[in-house]
Length: 174
Ligand code: OFO
Image (tube, rainbow, N blue to C red; front, side):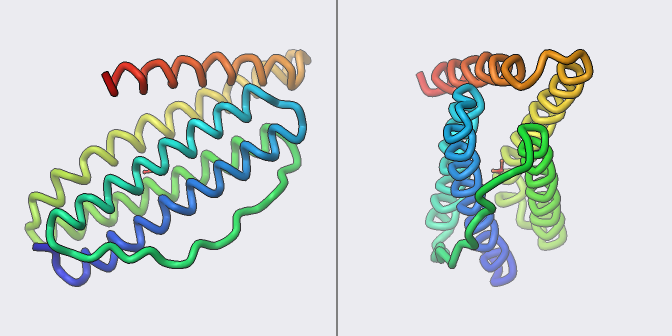
């Protein structure tokens, strides 16, 4: 059974994951409006993944007998100065989510709630992968722009990474 504190914090995490869904969908829309189709697919896929993160928490709470409570979600920004700026904002958002997950883990340890601690390990690995993926994209953007190839090459590169991610998600499903 979840403590009141963990119930409150897991609910807050459900809301953070829901915010990630709308943030990434909005980012996808911005990319589409600029004609950056590869980046648009990347963010659409990210939004779908975030929905799964949200549902995983939702289901876990139900399994423990707690009531998931869906709160109000803040509206995300609607435009960014550049593709680099967009990915920097994404990276920073994921770093914040990693910190949130770490503080949930800390509470679970403090309360000796080993079931929740075990459940949260999936998010710990996921956040590690997210940060690594976004840092690699930022590094590639910096490399490409430094060499003057521009945003078209960035878009192609992100599209390729997005397709790789999609096929590994599909493999996990089957
Ligand atoms: Fe990408 O954040 Fe969910 O967990």
